[in-house]
Length: 217
Ligand code: PRP
Image (cartoon, helix red, strand yellow):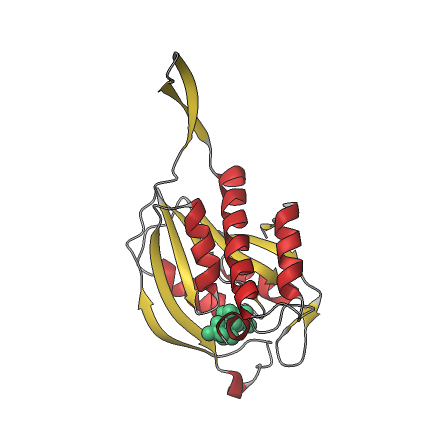
């Protein structure tokens, strides 16, 4: 499976701050925005190429560079914890088209024998995807991976295969990466941290708690 760590020092620094219980709602949310921006820059650096373009400076003509494909980006916001994370990504990809999907774990049902949760989907609004697109599905937490699998099914349903498909999370559990990687081998799984494990309630340990609750109250 294609799992890649985002190792930028600022990403690790920012993630460590938002993990801490001493980080209140506003700095938590701002931290997620910052992390999204850094992750966006890292995706640009790692996955997109540049091409040469002519530039006229006030003094002379020269050859400069531009990022290829940066205008063909689709970002999927998995409500609600991904909203600040996506706000940061949009700073790196200001022209991105955005899809929104509300998908959440049915916590009452608990984990099934396979370690997955039933997922309820309430709202789906997606842009049309083209074969040129880089699609980034963002959710700060990948725990059992149940939410992400449901989201990816909805995103890829009846659409052409995009040029690049990234699943981006801040913290991931091994189970979640395995589940998503098995079901969607075409996806590149990007995460700032691969955490140790899930607890009996399906929470990531050490994790950062419930990102939705911490960001929105
Ligand atoms: C959290 C998180 C993911 C999901 C991960 O959302 O933002 O969407 O859980 O868990 P999984 O990998 O086991 O499916 P939650 O359901 O708490 O919704 P919220 O963002 O609205 O708080």
